[in-house]
Image (cartoon, rainbow, N blue to C red; front, side):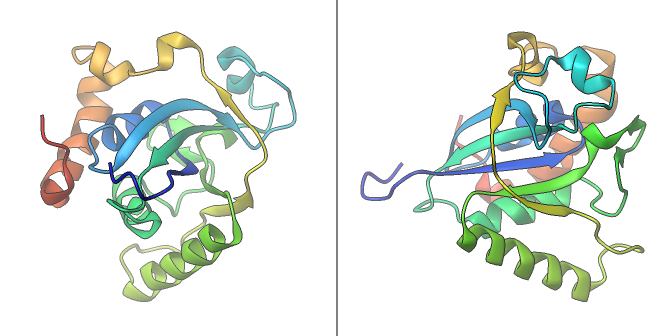
Length: 183
């Protein structure tokens, strides 16, 4: 981390937070990743409440990063590589508004960068359908329960981890090998 740069935060939802956390934990310049909930109307929701699809929350990760090492634009390029931004309220077999693709921007600069990256992705025609990623101002973040934190690292042999998360992590590693943290 470069001591002269101020750390920044972003909050992203792209399906199951376990998948996003597993990828961003390995990204150079990312200082911290916390799984949680954002974008809803129920204070301090539990996982069980969010799963009812009635709280309005999305499963998200809150990422603290060093912009001297990695830019917000690079964070977003990883984001758009590891999930399908064209399916509203779903990622694969995970269905419901809690799995929506969403960027909760923390300031106007993040909003403008996200809008530009989405336009560039659309223009590149990378997906057969339009990008439906929601852009919303960040309001509040509620960390998920402890058992959700570092889930992939702690449960690599769990079936969901092997079938869903590991392929996303491998895809990320192949495409962004030059951006991986040194072990």
